Image 1 (cartoon, rainbow, N blue to C red):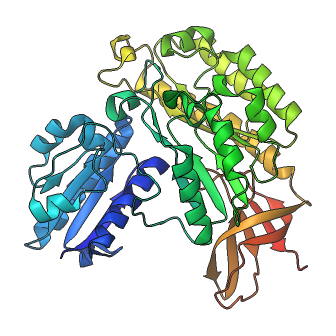
Image 2 (cartoon, rainbow, N blue to C red; image 1 turned 45 degrees about the vertical axis):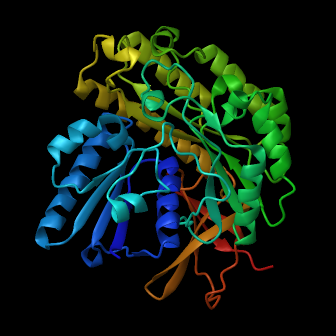
Length: 441
């Protein structure tokens, strides 16, 4: 059997799909290596959501076409969102690739390798609690994918074209997977989806996310539950109430996308700045210490000087704890692709940088507020630097991979038996991280 290297591009949802690929192939006896030079087969799980992601995917594919050429017998497989959406184009551009698969068969790629054929499913693949999966995120936290696809009609978004309509897992399946993860020592789960707050609607479950959280709260061994990828219009009073539970991190990941009513209407979104600010105020009033992350798009058709000013004012008023900004790129097949571009690529990038400059100051202020305080943190890993051990950890207000870290200086030698949670005294605030020292109980 070939030794395999798996490379994942894109979001956390892609990472879970890659973990399924690892699990299903491992179950059939395949071996893996993190070093491509030692591999016989490289699998690239691509992202195809926006133009920069596709550019990155093509660069990586090109790199491994060269890798394949260097040694006879090597093979290359390309899977995932980009292959699903534009597979015909990619097959012409990269005829050197041996195997192709989209987003429907992550658990059955062995059939391509062993039978050289695969009868693909009609729907996007959605795992359950019985699906083989190798957790790659570390020893004490994991992502849990609760659904696939999206049934919203945002005019700029290609997700429904790639993944199809929303399909929820059953509550019982998710709960069982979380119990399985907790039994392996996982302390934090991060619920992910293209819209977690939509969960259950396709199954006619009213208040589905709240019902799911009610079932997850009693899971033994689990300490933190975090909800990622929400939708602002779907933050209900019932959801706010259950998010007061100690086990649920008061973390709201809500992509507002813009603030201008004009631009939002063109985007197919509804929550403009006044409504958004009212929601933010409500969240912070009901849940003191709540943390809000958002993502925004700049350079959308129709975003003039006035609309961009509205967006900047919104960012200043909202004071988001965490924020990301994307420059708009038209996506083939979406409703917005027919809109005439009104902002040049250079101006889009300038606006992105301007928003991020505003956020940089907001982030500094946010992190400075913790100096002198004590935090409970989840210790992810420890690295040795000049004979000293530095811990890389996160607090409840920091989501994995996208937010900052709490860096812990001068950790003792735990002899490879690192605790999951530590108490830390914050000594210094950086722009996107905190630095502190261990509190010895």
